Image 1: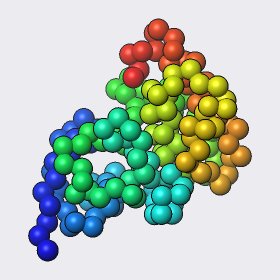
Image 2: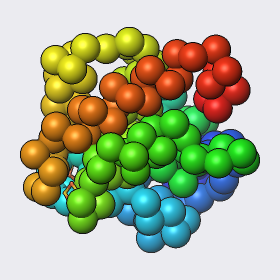
Image 3: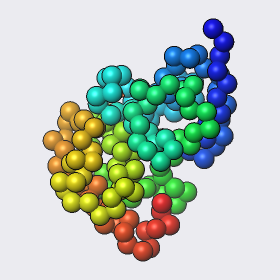
Length: 164
Ligand code: FES
Ligand code: FES
């Protein structure tokens, strides 16, 4: 079977790949492009460790075929920090101890990144609901909720807008 030529923008950079019909986006990112921040936890759409941002939505990249991504704009955790330092979410996960082993963290960050654009000033309950597709085996979640809430507060300050 022939390969599919796919052009995607990843973290602001146009990238060409040639993939088989059945190649999953998570494998293209990790194995072809060496963007190993997105993790493989289950490969069955349950854990969220593979979450990336695709055309303005959170997707579990183990459920997306790369061949479907022609022209897509993708952001991975590698593209989250700005030139002037960590993204407020990364800073907040650090400050609030929102991670332990860190395996779930790239997916958590990328889901939180999109969630805070959907709901810039969420309650703790809304964060729990918005992040429900991302599982963590270590933290008990409370510090993750705290981190997302802390980041939302920081991002809503006028001077933080340039960090987006
Ligand atoms: Fe994709 Fe678990 S690896 S949801
Ligand atoms: Fe270990 Fe979340 S910090 S799985």
